[in-house]
Image (cartoon, rainbow, N blue to C red; front, side, top):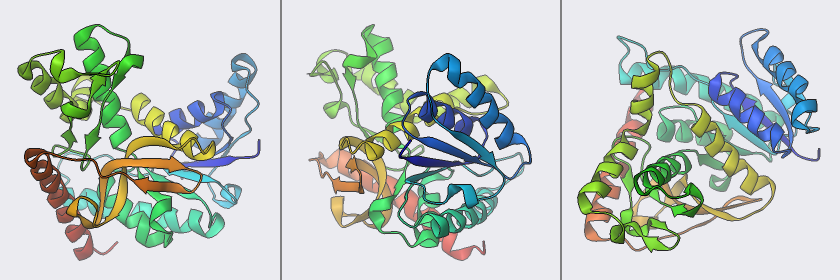
Length: 311
């Protein structure tokens, strides 16, 4: 294949992203992880499924970074989940150190790549990768809005018993409790959901979207979501690899848009071969704007906490 994507982290999200990329025949895939044997085993397993799935993507698993050289896209999923007794600053510091190291490794070998950040805390890790790579802002993008919007779309489809293909939704802001789902810009076959359900039901779906990740964690008990996050990252990668120029909600570095400067925030962007090719400033109500700026303030807190840490 003429395209290559490296996935850093061979856990559930990374391995599923590798599977999606290969089975869509978007690119050859390099799967990198520090645990010896894991990326090699998962890559081999996926390669052995290729005759059944009828794709010719080449898959490589490795514990080093040399095989990643010349990647068009690098998807970074590396990091640890928050553990009992671990503070937010502990998680921030540990994952910042991991993301900084892997970003430096891949950036030196693939200086023209676009980085898609999946590691948490998402918005803060975008800043780490941005600083560590020294890439232009267009080529460092956070995966959050695509996932959150997909969850909102799924809940709308469930509520109305309609095809998910007919649902469209936008979620802005940081990836967390302060995210801003926008019912006014969410629709079914072009019909705003505000005309299809009561305000109470819409608010219930908005809250379920905000708690989407936590809901899955509470059900799984010992893990977190990975099918939908992997699909979200791959949708972003596909738009870049194929220069599809899809308009998707992603964490992008803002320099004054929406009155926000110097932060990675989820907003609608055009994703093409150059990465973020345009940021769309949609009109927000006063209430929506206030919610977005509250979300930005939460991201600023993370960024400020990062600045105080040694990682």
